[in-house]
Length: 252
Image (tube, rainbow, N blue to C red; front, side, top):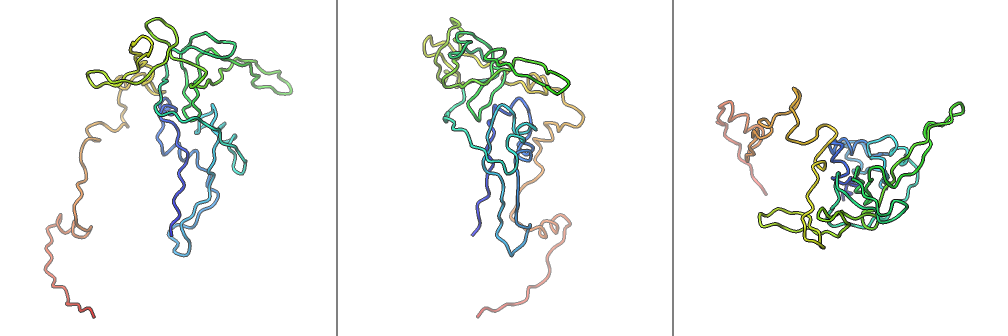
């Protein structure tokens, strides 16, 4: 019997889209392996003991702050998150805050934390925090944006009248999936900043660097699967023909 390999909690696509980091790097930064059986040892079943529960916050999983919040051996309680079938808020969207002291104010979505259904709106829903306080230094007080829940705390702004609205996904005649305001029927366009990353503003504006893999190399087929063994493949490439006669075998 083989135990199924544990799968780390997945980081939301739109949470990591701006960071532009490969999944293998995020997995390597997140996983905390306490013990595992020796590799290719027939005496043991393949078993891995590692952290299975993580608590997500405003700190990204690849940051030092996230590691400190989920230290090895530290008991953390995972947050209860309402499942959302399809994500509808993106970086650059204009939203209106529905709760708190900034109720009624509008701002742009600056960061997405899809694992907790949170967004951070630029300059709104702030809280004073003291940074760098030491014995010989009083520290600096700054305003830091706090996360807002997309299901209850914010609403998309209708571009037709700049008022909050409910939206739903629909298909156009050209087969394009768009967000539509249920009140006015106006299409809410996707913001251009939704495709931005920390490396480039828009994908088509990115300039290839000398160490980047070109598109021609990616699209080039370098391997064609064939029903043959490694030895048979080498023999075909070197022009070697099999002339040995196999010895007869008998089964009883």
